Length: 130
Image (spheres, rainbow, N blue to C red):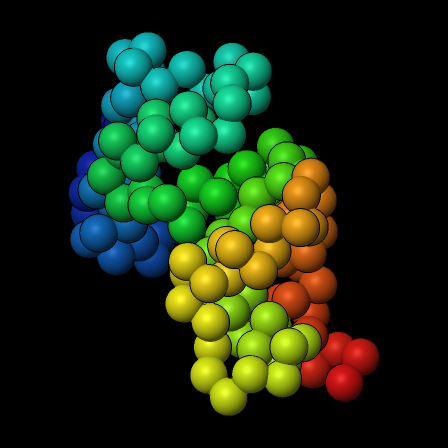
């Protein structure tokens, strides 16, 4: 149904040009069967990320958010997320936010519940419990 809508209608609904092209590409891939959304949950996290980032407008961070919030995966650490980096900076009393590699190494001990740790870092960065 989305692919039948004109660009003008999609833009009129508030989608930017980039978002419009992204949802159209996602719809096209789902319809064509190149991205099988119904069976995606069966795959390993890395495989899901690999497939999702093939869609225009979906990067690693977006794929990780899909894993955490839509598929309920418990062991995803979005190392490029600024909120997670800031939360870890506060938790560890660091002067600067940790780089993604540093964050990955530091949170390895949180496996298999890194998603829960990421959520806690977002809360900490938001000032909850401070």
